[in-house]
Length: 80
Image 1 (tube, rainbow, N blue to C red):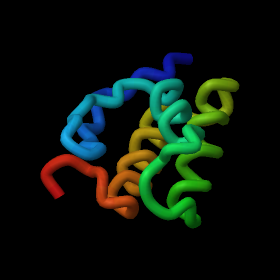
Image 2 (image 1 turned 180 degrees about the vertical axis):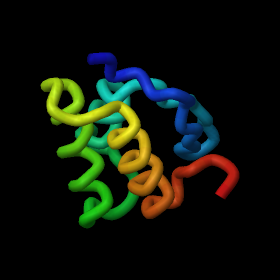
Image 3 (image 1 turned 60 degrees about the vertical axis):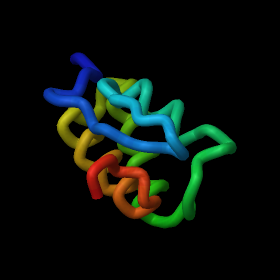
Image 4 (image 1 turned 90 degrees about the vertical axis):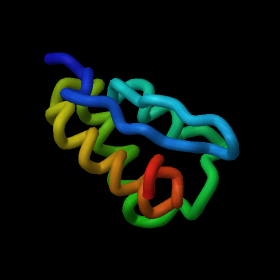
């Protein structure tokens, strides 16, 4: 099972914009101690879902949706 998203999630941290294309990349960002924004329920759900995708227990589509939600909650979703 692939952890690749069907389309990237564009985020902006400071002045840097980037595309997040896999659950592995999303999990790395969510688990980073420098994640800007609150580590509330959306963050926790996204991180747990990404880890489950990596372990083969959830779909990449689930991880993409949860990561986009966490990025939106943290004010990082590009274009929002």
